[in-house]
Every structure is written in C-alpha cells, then in structure tokens.
Length: 296
Image 1 (tube, rainbow, N blue to C red):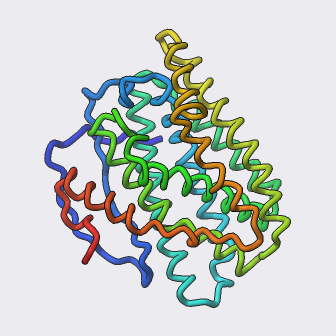
Image 2: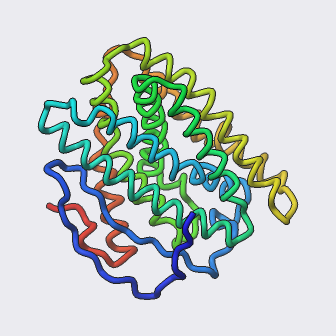
C-alpha cells in the first residue's frame, strides 16, 4: 500500500467532471485522515471499528477483481448504454480501491496490521483469477456487489447504524455507500447480457456467502492478533448483539439477501435514489463541496 500525505486543513476544491455518458460518475474525493483521530473511531468501540477495518482491508484488491471480471466482457457488450455504465462502474471502483488503500495505511499507522490482511487478500485474488472461469469470476462479482449494495443501503437508510462514528471518518463510508448503490446493477447486467446462467449465479452466491462470512471473521482475527492492546470481550458481545440481536442489523438484511435467489431478481427493483440524494447533500455540507450535492 502507498501511504497518503498527512491531512491538509484546506484540501483543494474540486469540480465535477463527467467521464462517461451514464448517470454513474466517479467522484474524486482525496480523503485525508486526521492523525489525531483515535484508533477506535467508531463510537470508541473496538469491535465495530475493527469489523469495518477488516472489510476495508479486502476492498482494494476486491474492487480490482471486480473491475477485471467486468472488463473481460467489456468489448463484447453491444448495448451502448450498458457500455457507458461499465465505464462508470470501473471508474468508481478504481477510486474506491485507492481511497481504502489510504484508509488502510492510516489504520496501520494506528497500530492495526492492515498490510498483513491486504497481502493475504492479494494472494487469494490471484488464486481465484487462475482457478475460476471468467463466468464464475463475474458471478462472484455479482454476488459480492449484492453484499456491498445491501450494506451500503443499510448505511444510507438507517442513520442509526453509523451512530457514534467520528465525523472525520463518516464521509469515507457515506461516499462509498452512495457509489455502491449507484452502480449496484452494472455487473449484474453484464452477467445477464454475457452469461445469463441462473445456476451459476445462484450457486456462486451460496458459495460466496460462506466465504464472505468466514473470511470477514478470519480477517478480524488477523487484525486483533497483531495489536498491542487487550481484546475487549464486552465490545465483542455488544457487537454481535448489534449485528444479530437488537437492533440486529445483519438479521434485517435477510429478505434482501434471499431476493437474489429469485429468477426474476434485479438489483434496481429496489429504488434507492432518495437515500443516495440525502447522503450526497449531507456529504456536500460536511466537506464544503457543493458540487457533490444532487442536481435538481
């Protein structure tokens, strides 16, 4: 990972610039992380902070895997609208990978061994690229994009989910959530256009579900094993209740998750434009970047 320069109190103002002919436009953010921010920036909670950090450790290599799996079919796409949306998807995912590399470097500076997890994920992605067919790689991308869309829209729809997060960290997660929601159907539409197999799509989701849960737990453990403070068992217990008990955020995603197995499923059947616009307005105000606000 490449380290990012320290925080500048007045980052340069950027203007929006269209990069393709679709509504999916990459936003260059250049997030900068205050070195005075505490290690546990999510409500001062060890479990919540490290859970999101474990996910972030998978994003740079994961996003690049997504891009490669879609790009494999890019030249075969004849629908001009889908071709433009693919360009937007690739642009957004590239920025996500870069910004989360910077975040992961910041967490490494706080004594959280993110590089170790990053390297592990890097090797895993190389293995998948060798062992999985292009069809399976794209189906896995569709599955993981559904996971990220569900989590993103949970953050956007339920402000309580992010309650207590340090306001200096909140913009990273809001921005990523908005863009994951914006492009949630692109890989799926490429898959439908170029592959189309219901069996491959759903069987890969079943496999990916086991992997996603298992590796998230494993990466959390990897982070904890390399740290210099004690495991906060109360934080772990409260965190599991937060996810699975009350309020049980993950438990609430059950219906959205199961919808993926329907033959008629399509990501855009859930219209999330209103919550995206609300989040973009919030980002524009928080960062003093009016160009981020939704156009009226």
